[in-house]
Structure formats: C-alpha cells, structure tokens
Image 1 (tube, one colour):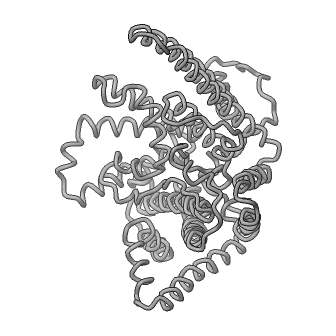
Image 2 (cartoon, one colour; image 1 turned 180 degrees about the horizontal axis):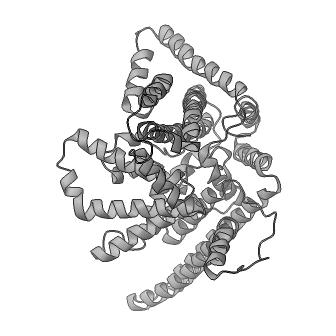
Length: 493
C-alpha cells in the first residue's frame, strides 16, 4: 500500500479521518498512532518491531538525559561559580555518553541491516576469501523507512541533550513523532520542534485543512502517475540499451531521469504533506524549486531540504562547520557528503555520488565560486544544471565504470552525438517535458493562480478549482488503474 495507491487515498485515509473525528479530542493523537502502526504493519509485517524498538530506545534515552539534567540542577544548588562549572562539566560528560550510547545502538542496527552485506562482499573481494561468512541470517530484511526514522530519532535525542527541547514523558507522543504514517516511508525528516505544535493538538477536522490537504494530494498523485511514470518509459528504454543510441538521445534520457526523480519524490512529498494537512499537522517542506538554483550549493538548499538540514545541523556543525581552518573545512565537507551518499544506499555508486558533490562544493567554495557569481544569471543556471545532471548519472548508474561509460556515450563517444532520433523522443514526450517545466518552476504556481483567480466571483472560482483538481485526479486514477505497481524511486532508501 504505497502513498499513491487507490487503497491509501480512497480507503485508508478516509477511514483514518473518520476515526480521528469521532474520537474524543484527548484520544485523537493515539488514534493517529494506532493507524500509523497499522499502516506500517501492512507494509512491513513483523518488521514493525524495529520501529517499536527504536521508539522505546529513543524515549528512554530522552528520559535518561532529562533525569541527568534534573540531577545536575540539584547538584549545583548552593555552590559557587567554580564548583558549578566542575559539576556541569561532569554531567555534560555523562549526558554525552548516554547520547553516544543511543546513537551507536541506532546506527548499529541500521548499519547491520543496510550495510553488512556491502562491507562483507567488498572485504571478501579485497582479501580473496569470504569474510564474516554466516554472521547474517539469509532472510533478514530491512524495515521500510528505517533510514528516515533513524535520523529523526537521532535528531530528537541530540536536541534533548543540547537542551533545545524537553523530552516527552508520554511514550505514545514519542511514538507518534517517529511513526506518523504519512512520513514513515520517505520523510520528510522532521525536527521535533518543527512538528510538535501541530502533531498533538487533537483539534477537530477543519474544512480548509481538508480541502487544502486533498488538493495537495491530488497534485502529488498527478506528478507521480502522469508525468514521472510516463517519463520512466522512455528513460528505462534508453538506459537499458544506451549503447545503441546517439549522445543527444542519451542526454535527453538523462534529463528525463532527473525530471522523473523530481516529479516522483516531490509528488510523494505533496501526498505526504497533504495527508498531514488533513489533520491540521504541518510537516516541513522538502523541495523549493531546486532547478531554479544558480549553483550546486543552492540546489541542495532546495532539494531534499530536510536531509540537507539534518546533515548540516547534526554532522557538519558539530564537526566545526565553517569555524575551522580551510583544510579542516574541506575534510568536513567531504565527510558529510560521503555519509550523505552512503545514507542513500549500500553501493559504490552512491558513495561516488556523495564524494562527487563533496568535491564540487569544495571547489565551488574555494576555487571558482566567486568567478561563477559574476556570470550572467542564465549561465549560472546552466552551470548548476550541468553539474547536477552529471551527479545524477553517478547516482543511477550501477557502478563507477557504468557511469563513466554513460557519460562518454552522452557526449557522443559511442555512436556519435547528433541524431534524428532525439527529435522523435522530444516530439513523443514534449507534453511531459512541458508539464515538468511548469511543475518544477515558479511558472506552474503562477499559471495555477491565474487560472483559479480568473474570476472575482467566489462561486466561479470554486467551480474552476474543482474542475482543475478533479480533472487531475481522474487522469491520475486512470493511469493508476491501468499501470502495474510502480513504487516511488526513493522507496528504496
């Protein structure tokens, strides 16, 4: 039951809304938690135990850290300034040990499930014989969403340690924060302080929230089913046989893949954020027109915002951020981006992709960034899109060698560059490219506002809104019924 399935949109969500509305206000948060666990169980079955274990550990670490802070406050009563400093330093060390314990357990579970095979296979190749053979059960599966809720749990514990939030005393509240069903599979990776104000209110459903939520859901479904999945047909055909095509066609397919990935992932976020909006819960935005960026740094402030924010707040800044020497800052950037690549998957292509962006951002910061800033705006956009496109080639390629061969073919190194085929590809997919341009820039929102506000009459505007969004819904559902199941690309992470 994916977010774009008929069961989720037309059965699960309505039943959850009805149960939520009928429940007493103080029990509505628990109703959401029950449906969240049901949703996760339907997706992963007994693997729900990993989410429950993460919840219990996160809650206990938060309480433990709070108890240490309480003990510290009592211990320093009546002491002079020098004595207080010594006691606080002692308790800070204790708190740090508790936090590290919680982080190591969470990362240990994630690492064993997600990366054990990767490391053992590569170590076996390195040493020429099997390494750690038999240490992993053959049928051990990785729970859906573990990469997302693990980071969210670490962020929660760290914020409690830093004192920026108070630890929850009721475990159901911690459980709802980590397991809220719309975001459990693909994020966004929320910070506790960003969602706490709306997550536990238990307010009754509001007409405006329901309308806005479903409008967002319908738009996300349209992006996934009508644009991304149609684009995928052409992309997969070229990717599977790229050696048979000219460079221009391969380049067109690579651009198509970027469009497919953006429309899928941002469409998924629209469905997720819209689902939260139905209940009046505000989840953080994860995209802000990334293709309008003028450089790769800006691109990553606009793409998968919650992940970039997490690595900045909980890895980059604790390593020293910008307040270190140039050499140390370069190392910090490379560490952050290598970890970002590894987070996406246990394969060399993701690690290379992460290192690629680390190197690009280092060079941009210390070598050519000031020069690019003086270029005309159009050239800056082209510069950003070219580097981003090359990055995605490393991302989707199964190996470094495959990525280099694809890039070589893309510039005409195989069958040449120019070809009449590219015109056929563009002409047969022009509508999807046009919709992608409209949907990924400010042009789309401006056009939509212009259409919806074409009349000053409220009734006319309401009718136009219904026609536009129900039209998108009908088209999306038609494709949804006709297609075989095609999960979101980011579902794999």
